[in-house]
Length: 307
Image (spheres, rainbow, N blue to C red):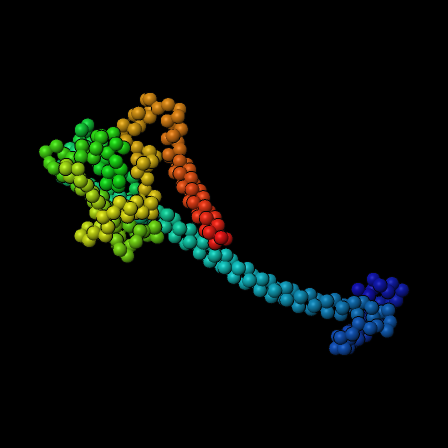
C-alpha cells in the first residue's frame, strides 16, 4: 500500500517504514487520534479512520436495526389495534342487522276471532309477524276476514260496500255478532304497556236490534280498560293504522271500481288520501281556525280590560 504512494524509496526502507508505521498505528489506535506528523503516516491514519468509521457504521447499523425492530413492534401493535377496531365494527354491524331483522313489535295483528259474522259461525286465525296470505275457494269467507278487521277497528258499514248498515253483517240465523282483534303492543312504540301489557284486545259486539259497542281489554282479555271509541282512535294513531287509507286496506270492490271506472278527479282524490295530504290539509285548517279563535278571544279580553 505504501509502495504505491512512495515510488522513489528503496524496498528495505519501505519495510522499515511499514514496521514503524505499525508501531505508530498501535499508538494512534490507543490515543484514538487522527493527527499526523509526516506524509508517510497518512495511509496508516487513513486505515485507523476506516476502522473507526467501520465501528461507527456498525453502531449505526445496530441502532438502525434496533429502531427497525422497534418500528416493527409498533407496526405489529398498530396492526393488532386495526384488527381489533375492524372486529368491533363488524360486531356492531351484525348487531344492527339483527335489530333490523327482528319481528315488528307494535301494531302487528296477532289474531282475529269471528263469531256469527257474515258467513262465519266460529272462526279463528293467527298471523305471523310479516307477510300473510289467506287462500281459499270462492265464497269461503276470505273477504269477510278483512271486513271484520276494518269493522273492529272503527270503520262504517258503508266503507265495506257490503251493506248500508252494520247489522247487515250479522249472520242471518243469529241476533248478534262478535269480532275480536288482538294487536301486538311491545317495544318503544307500545301504547300504555303498563295498563295493557304486551298486547291489546279489541272487541266489537254488534246486535241486530241496532246497538253495538267496543271493549278494549288488556293482554289477558279479561280486564276491560276502556269502552270508548276515542281510546281506540288513540291506539290506532299510536300504531299509525289508517283503516280509511286504500294503501293500507284495499278491498276487492274498491280496487275493481278504481281500475274500471275511476275518473281523473277520483284518482287524484285517491292520491291525496294515500299520501295523507288531505289529512294534513284538514289538520292545518283546524289549527288555523283554533289560532284565529284564540286571537279573537285575546282581542276581546284586551278591549274589556282597556275599558
